[in-house]
Length: 101
Image (cartoon, rainbow, N blue to C red; front, side, top):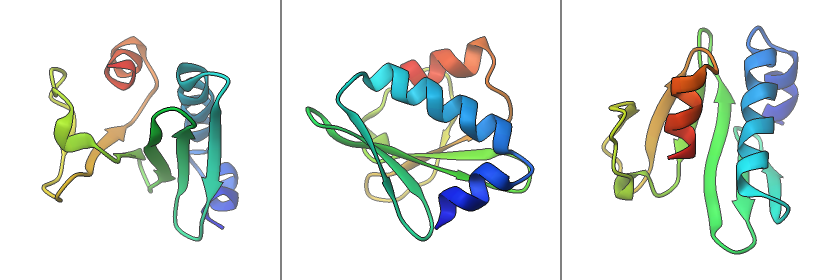
């Protein structure tokens, strides 16, 4: 499972801090789903929100409905039907604001 690679890899601290922040934002009804390639985050009320996966030099957040996000922080990339990605290099104030948005 990917989560074992994420928590043991070079970006494990970034993964764990971002994971904690996302779970805090979702609230008490959040839950994780583990798969071979990603760890996904869901809200019982909203459904699927995003997934996390570590890369060599950043953390990748895949926003399931990213195409509908107003990208006021200019941090999303991709052109899939709905998913948009966000590269996270550090969990600073600006990055937290973009995730919360």
